[in-house]
Image 1: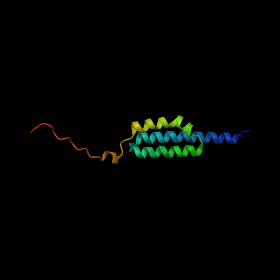
Image 2: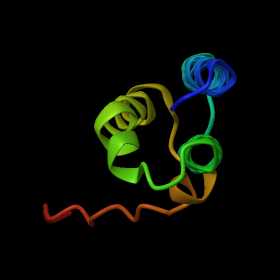
Image 3: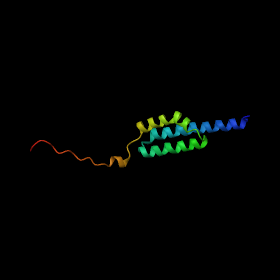
Image 4: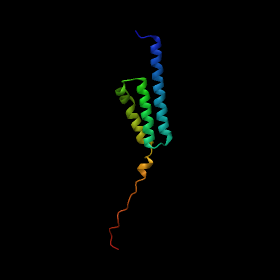
Length: 96
């Protein structure tokens, strides 16, 4: 039989997960972070959520993976190392 204390604890963990997802989403949307930093933030949030609900990897993927992926695609900027590549111009093919 489930006790009232166990139910309260479950609700507390669910509320914390909701806060964590909301907070992480807001930081990504407002932070102008490089993609690698935002991915690290998502990874830390995922690890914490799975600490609270062990063995629920599949549930996390269904509920949050696509949401975070969209946020990463829409609100992050390229990593500085990725922009450091030098583009060499093609020579002008017209005779001089």
